[in-house]
Image (tube, rainbow, N blue to C red; front, side, top):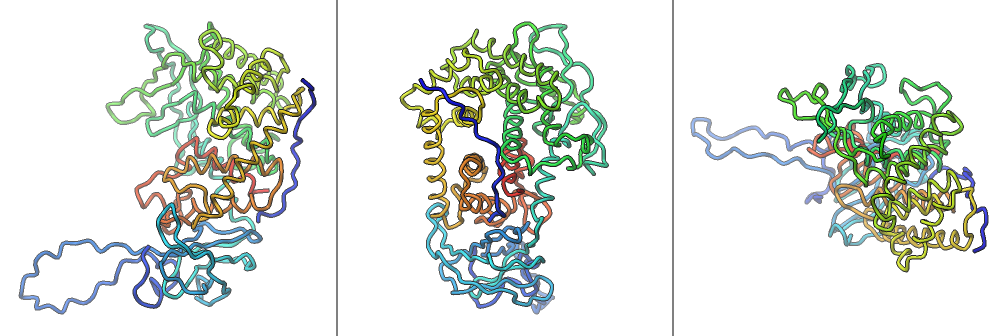
Length: 525
C-alpha cells in the first residue's frame, strides 16, 4: 500500500453565492404581499333580519398564494428564484415594491411542467439581475401575488446567528441571561445531583449540556452528533463563524461555535463512566406533577454502546479542532475518546456498528495510531463500501474525516472517496434541477434534504462548483417558504411560518439546527 499525505487544506475560494389558482384575473389581495393571506371580506347582510338564518356556522378558509418565495429574502448578488404553482401560467412575472406597488423588474416564467414529487404544475422565475436592496413581492397575471421578501447583502446574518444562538438558549445548568436570550432567559435549572438508574444510592453530577426537547432531557448520542456537525461546519467554512454572535463567551478570541461545542463537550465528559469508559445514554428529566421540568429531578440511564461509540468520535474530533485554544482540555477529551472506543470494542465487534468507522477515522486523524487504521482498512475492504457511502451517515462522515487528515493515507483510496463524493453530489444536483421546486426532496421533516445539503457543502468545499452553491441556496429558499405549502419552517417572524401552522420549526430540533448551520455556513462566506 502506497501511503501519502492526502490532507485537504481548508482553503476559502468562494465567490458570492450565487395552491390555488385564481379563477379571475388579478391578485389574491390588492395591497401587496402583506395581504396575501387575508380572509375574504365580510359582505353586508341584506337578508331580512326578522327571519332566523340557519346553518351559517362555517369557517372561511384562508387563501394562500400560488407564488412561492423565500419569505426571509435573497442575498443581493445571489441567484434568485421564485416558484409559480398553477396549471396555466402567464409568460411573465413582475417584482413589485412592497410599499409603492411599483413594478421594478419583469422576467420570464420558465420550466413549466408538472412536478413529479408534488404532482403540482409549476414554473420558475429568475431575477438574478435585480439587486436593489429593499422589500418586495412577486405578481403574475392568472396567479396573483406572493408573500413579501427582502433583498440585502446581509439577509442571512440574523437567521444564521439565531440558529447558532439556539444552543446557548438550550443550555442546562446555568442561568440564561435575558441580555443574550431575550424572553427565553431563565434561572439555572437541574443544578442538583442526578440519581443513577438501576443503582440505588448512586448519584452523579451531570449538570450542563443542552436540552433536547420540551421535557428538558439531555441526550449523549444527539449531543455527540451535534458537536460533530458544528465542528465540521466550522472546519469547512471558518470564515462564517465569528466571536460576536451574542453569547456570554463572545469576545474571548475563540469562535463562538467552538465555545458552544466546548460547553457540550464538558457535559459529555461528565456522562462517561469512570470505571469502564462507557457513556450513559440520557440525563432524563423525571415526570413533574407541576409540569415544571426545569425543577424536576434527573435520572441518568445506563451505559449505551451507541452513545459510547458516538462519544468517542465527537471527542476525538473535538480534540484536534480545539487543540490550539486549550491543549490540556483537548488532550483530556482525546483520552476520554480512546477509553470510550476501547469500551465499545470490549463489548461489540467494530464491524457490527458503522459508527466505529467514523470514530476510528477521527482517532486516527488525532493520533496516527495503527490500531485505528486497521479498523478503517476492514471497512474500506467491504464489497459494498461505495453503496454504504451514499446510504450510511457514519461511513460518509468517517470518509470525509479520512480525506481531511494529515496522517498518512492511501492516495488511491482518497481518489476513490472523491469519486464517491462526486457521484452522490451529481445525483443530488440532477434531482434538484429536475424538481419543480428546485430541491432534492420535499419530505415534511427536512431530514433527508439537510443530509444531502451537508454532502453538497462538503463537495463544494473540496471541489468548488458555483452550481452547488446555487442548489444549496435554493434548498434554503425552499425551507424558508419556497415550498408547496408556502410555509417558512426556519424563522417565526414572516407572514406564514411553522408557528402559525402548528408545526415544529427546524431550529427547534437541535440536530436539524446543527445541519441548518452547516448548510448556511457556505452561504455566509
